[in-house]
Image 1 (cartoon, rainbow, N blue to C red):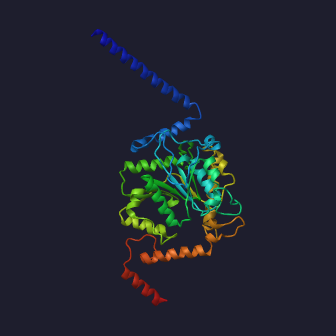
Image 2: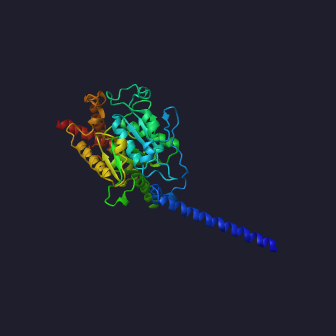
Length: 398
């Protein structure tokens, strides 16, 4: 009996020594990190660590997002300047945050959009560029001249250098069709939610006077989910980060609301969908994760300019430049979205010329027929009798 007790005491002592050694090594490891540039990485991970307790299905390491079928191209891990310049890489464990960026035209805008997300900590492996140019058979082998065609898309740069993924739409989709495609892809993969971004924006951390407050934009994304889950918010359909320039979509809610109306191919399809989701009792939430700049022109060297040291003069210069090009877009006398169809010689592509505008106007008319008004947000659909009466009055007026 005495020998058994002695054996137990020895085992307990050994466990205590090992535990103390592990704690000491952990403290030593953290102290070493604090004296290196890697402290920023560790601090960033600790700041968002509380988020993980709200996400029981997190995998470590997180899997790369992937989609089925022959139209998905998996990017490889980014390297070179992307790994060297990023100050806040993603933490060791994180939730899956798939981000779709549909692309139609003007690759230089898409390029800086993708780089801005990577610079702000969004994992490149979680980003999916949707090729909606209608010319994938030319873009994949790089037979489209970059300077002459607004539909050019550099597959090799995105996949091999930036490490993002590409989904090739088999045919060119309208705006509403693209929204339905993303919902169906997410549903097929069992994703509870996904993010969607415009291709003509640049995301940045909030430019605070205190350098310590320069949290990466991606940390704000995780913070939004943490606060929503903590508040037990269940009847949400979409979270906006500066309207729908970047949005977080609830796939379950989308299944209940229904698909986007393809008879309203472009504008104001958003007004139709957001009105219907409110009628179903869902909410559109807003969250400020950082700065989102809506732009129509390109930075001279985004691979360098979008990766400045936090709080540096270069960081401030970039912020001011983005403010200026964002203002210039809103003041464009030709229209804020004419950048979409500009060819290399400055001419407007047929894709976005008069025929495109005719389709947009047809969509507005379709919306007016459906809802009986041009107002963006409505409370209920218009009955067929009311629609007939409105049409009769319009014909009588002229």
